Amino acid sequence: MKTFEHWQIAYRQSGQAKFQLVPNPTWAWAADPFLVDYRGKKMLFAELFLYKSERNGVIGYCEFDGNKFSEWTVSMDKHWHLSYPNIWEDNGKLYMCPESYQAEEIAIYELIELPNKWKKVKILMQNEKCVDSTFFRYAGEEYLFTYRLTNSGIIGELILYKVGKDGKLIEGKIVSDNIENARPGGKVIENDGKIIRVSQDSGNGYGSGLVFSVIENLYPVYRETEIKRIKPKDISIDNSSKYQGIHTYNKLGELEVIDLKYNVFSIREFLAQKRVRKVFLNKYC
Image 1 (cartoon, rainbow, N blue to C red):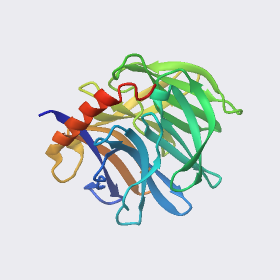
Image 2: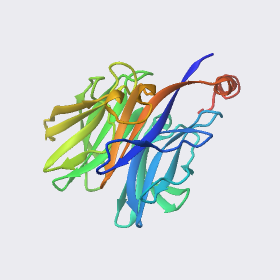
Image 3: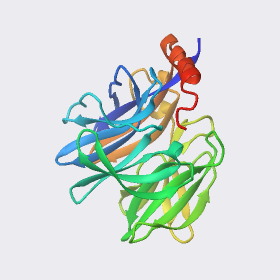
Image 4: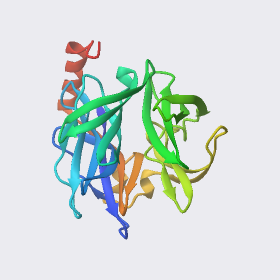
């Protein structure tokens, strides 16, 4: 029987050494966690991978009440795979830039109404297979990191763009093609005057670890210095030996979230995958 890769999100609050798992829904596994404070609610957005059906990735959310997370609700479902829901609040409005590499675009959506009414308000790039696009602001300027895939697997290039006042991307520069630290793994962190980029280490397989690097210089010459690497064995959590990967980290106030990879055997998933290949061969065409 075939082994399948699954992910699950874990969280902890300030002062806690051990992470706790956010239960996956019965119909999906969750990865790529992003936190946002919206209208007084702490919300967790993530990819929900519908492994029992032909739909694959959608975006879902749950809410944190101070002690635990609510059940998952699907928020965005398209005819292509969605993941890495980079989400932020601006002047009372909620925006998201989900990974949409199968649609070959980088686009921004505005929330019209919860749970699932979104409006596409801007297309930043088309006809490129980019993943894990990450916005951040520094010193009054806005920037975008994105990872452009250069083959059908995980090899690619990290590109840094300036975002103009009109919202258009300016002068993209390739800053890394190192599979061990290039691909973004969460929002850029500002801490004690330092800006820290979170990235994925896929040197030993997709999502095998996290890398934290201090950005020394942004533009026009980019420089960063690695300060920390994290593997699953470094995470304090029950049954830690079960996990083989970690590839996203985000933080909101005293709340931290990560995702952890593990392998499972599943006849139902094996049959669903065969059904997809037979019936939905041209699913995204």
